Structure formats: structure tokens, C-alpha cells
Amino acid sequence: MKALDEFEIWFVTGSQGMYGEEILAQVRVHAREIAEHLTNSDNIPVRVVGRQVVTTPEEIERVCLEANAAPECVGVVAWMHTFSPAKMWIAGMLALGKPLLHLHTQANRDLPWGEIDMDFMNLNQAAHGDREFAYILSRLRVTRTVVVGHWQDPAVTDRIANWARAAAARQELKRLKVARFGDNMRHVAVTEGDKVEAQTKLGVSVNTYGLTDLSNAMTEVSEGEIDRTVGEYDDLYLVSSDLGKDGDRRASLRYAARIEVALRSLLEAGGFMAFTDTFEDLGGLEQLPGIAVQRLMADGYGFGAEGDWKTATLVRAMKVLTAGLAGGTSFMEDYTYHLGDPAPRVLGAHMLEVCPSIAGDVPSCEIHPLSIGGKGDPVRLVFTARPGPGIVVGLIDLGNRFRLVANEVELVEPNGPMPKLPVARAVWEPQPDFRTAVSGWLLAGGSHHTSLSVGVGFEPLVDLAEMLGIELVAIGAGSSLEQLKNEMRWNRLFYGLVDGL
View 1 (tube, rainbow, N blue to C red):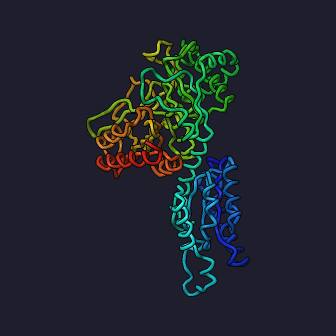
View 2 (view 1 turned 30 degrees about the vertical axis):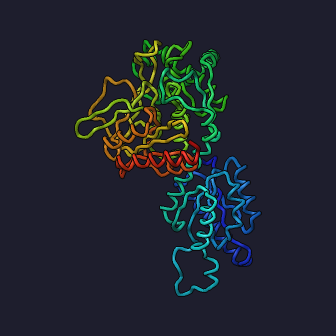
View 3 (view 1 turned 135 degrees about the vertical axis):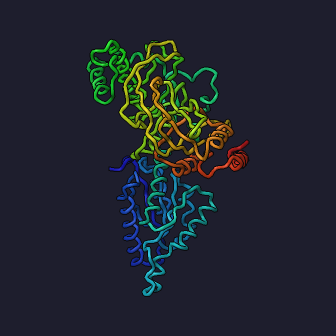
């Protein structure tokens, strides 16, 4: 089963009628063969559906309109097997509202040098047929991703897979609903933002719900539901003795389970796949949701603390983008630094809400004081993130545009045990080095709340930013501070001209 099997991309092949039915029949065979190869590829996370070979302006426009109307279709892959006069594509490309990937390939990998004749040449014309298509896309200023190479090349399927992940994340944003329980933390700037512009540009709908909704839902949770949820805690985690079956704080664990059951039911009933809360607005809740948030994130929900709806949105998008990959995705915060040997490192954490999908070992279920918020001690999962390459991403509102700031990182084991730190955490070395990465992040205005994904790189994020028409500042292995400064200067001019000053 595909990791994102609810989604599909449509494979559309261009040709024209002048070649005759015999050649068109061969085009259809080749198009079907390529689509089947792509959909059977293990690393492409969505289904690839071969559509008809299009030979007229009417057929082209029709398939584009059908793609727009199909909620399961997240994007279109187009390939010109033969020469397909590009004026035929104008109406369709102007109408297409889904992401486009231009696949520049050909049916055969090797040329049969001793057997080439004009029939072969008339059939295999992608070398110039795709150039005709690319011209009209450039003339119409159609945003697209270009992938070049033979369709059986693993590098080609890898590139299509990353684009498909981005297209699926974009589709999720277009239908995403975020529930905010309470507002954002008082006086904090970066968690604010224009929710109307977010819905206009990203598609996400963000609305606030009272803590009374959650409190009321908690009164309807049955003891049986609590028993089942607590049983999962006992089975899945290393439950501390004070929260164990005979522990003196077992009641706190049951209360945490009550929060989880109620919160999950509210989200499911409202069709929400992302949410926020804040310790400054807990109403009648006895403890800040900890383990409930962590487990909901592990099930794919986006989350942002202190009312940070932009990060909740981003975490959900990255959950979709990384579906099926080993590593996991979590809400995260750059908390404090190690500036000594062997290298400067970031200790990322939060008060409670780090997703166990990034855990390197079995999480421990514990209860500790929170020190802020004025409520009871919350239950949480404690663990350390597994080592490996990853990416830290923040989403900010600059007033006239949204900006994604992303940094490649290498997650590492902590320099030593942290027995007195009772929260989930991750330690990483930012790329290309600490000074460049952190300076670039600060100059870009990057947020302190982020989404951390392990085992994924820039490529699908670049595609996603292009699909959404938003800015991306990418800080990675090849970055320099001067290059980043210049890029942001150019971006300011570009987006000022495109979106208005």
C-alpha cells in the first residue's frame, strides 16, 4: 500500500493526430507502460494514474479541468512522446489549478543505432516535443517542476517521489482545518499572523474554539474509554512507578487520558487535522495537555504550542510530506545551545509537546511539575530523538508574504545523559556550521517554533514553496552568509513586484 494512497497524480501524454493511428497506438502502449512503472515504484508515495494520450486542444483542456475537480488528484505529470504543437496546450495550461511536473524522458533508453529509420524518428520525438511544450509553459509563466532522464532511472523516480510528496502536502493544506483552543501567548510576535491571507495563499482555515468545548467533551468521556487509553499507555511506554497501576499518581494519568479521548473526539468530529493550545488559557483543565498532544501528533495531527497556528499548519503539512518515510516529524523549539567541544549544538525541546515519532528508544511516561501556567503537574512522554539527517522548518508572516525558513541539520546523540531534564528532546548540529546557520536563521526572521523532520531534505520543500507561491530561505551544506543575505534582498524585490509592495 502507498504511504499516501488516498492521493494520485495523473500521467498525461501529448501527441497529435497527424502521425496516424499506428503511431498513436504505440504512444498509448508506451504511456501506459511508464505510468504502470511509476505507480509500482516503491518510493513514489501516491498512485500514478495513466490518463489518455491527448491530441487536441479540447482533450487537453478537458483533462486539466477534470484534474482540478478531482480531490484525489494532487498533480499532473505531462510528457510529450511525439511533437505536440504547444498552442493546443494554452487553454489547458491556463485552466490547470494543480501542480505540474514536466517529465522530459523517452520510451527507449538506448538508441538502436543500426535500425533507426524515419518511423522510429517520428515516434520518439520527446527531445524536441518537450522543448515545444516547455516554451509555451515559459511563455504562459506556468510554475512547474522539470525532471529529466529515463523513466526507469532511480534518480528520476526519486525526484518524482519528492514532487509527489510536496503535491500531497499542498493538497492537504487546501483542505486543512486548524482548531485553536485559546489565543496565542500574550505579547508574542512570531506566533501572530494573518489568518485570512493564510487561507487565501495556503488554503488552511484557522478558527478559535473555547476551552469550554474541551471541558464539556471531557465530562462525556466514559470510564471504559479511559481504561482503554490508559491500557495503551501501560503497553506502549515505560510508565513510571508513581503513574503505574499501584502508583500514588495514577489518577493524574487517568486525567491525562480523559483529555486525550475528549480532544481526539473533538478533532475528529470537526474534521480538524491540526490544533493549538496555550498554558495561559486552560480554563477548568487541571493540567496542560502533554501526552495527549504527543500521541495525537504521532497519529498525524499538526500542533503548535501557545496558539501558534502557523506551526501547527506546518507540522501537519510536513507530516503528509514525510508520510511513509523512516524518521518522523515533530513540533519543535530551539531551546538552548551547547557552544563547546566537540562542536556547537542545539538542544531542541518544549515544555511537553514533542512527537514520539522521532524517538530513538521507547518513551518513558512520567509526571513532573511544569513551573508555569499555575496548574497541576502534567503527564508527558520523555525520550531523546534518534540520530540522522533532518530538516528544521519555520513558517513566518512578513506582512506582505509568507516565508519558509529551513535549515539542514544532523541529529546527534547528546554529549551526556540528561537525567534531570524531564521532557522529550533532540540534539542537532545545524548545517553548514553553527555560526552560518544561526546567523542566517536570525537574519531571515526565522521562528523559534518549528517543525523538525528526520530523514528528509530540501527537495520536496522547494517544490512545496513553489507550488504555494511563497518564499523559501534554505540554509544548508552549501550556504554562505553573504549568499543568504543577497538571496533575501533579491526575494524582497521579487515578491514586492509579484505580490505588491
